[in-house]
Length: 199
Image (cartoon, rainbow, N blue to C red):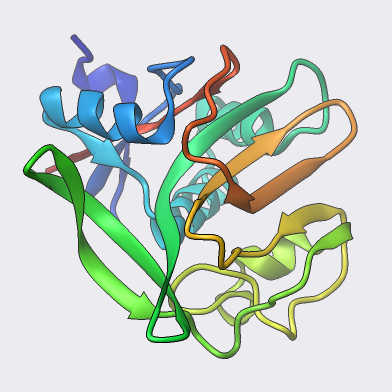
């Protein structure tokens, strides 16, 4: 069982966010399922942005180390699932998030919205600015980079219309990236999830 010492309290969210990822080697669906069994849930993309900003601006050395571990370009590869998937409906691409319940054995999102027209809808393999993305003007209210987000070193894979794409964030020895075109069935030992708990 995780204790309160295993979490960072993010006042802007009124949430406790785990210092470390857990539930490695589980796919996106099973990560949600296991988190819910524990009374926890997964970070949405906007929450992840606020979490990173909270760590980055803190004078707490432990929090700064957590931030560096998440965004640092170094080995080993490590990544974490985020609570967002993308589905086509009525010829429009939707972002679905807040998966906190089940119905007939299937995950149910509490929020389903047409993807913002301001969303950057092309891959940026050369990168966007991490600082730009984390800024208030660098992302949509859904947390995705905008068409105006500055160039930089953060790899970005845009949401797909294949009805089989979810979000995750990861770093390795050659890049850090936000991927929104990743298969939810993927599972590897370095891919986990960060538990979130309400006050």
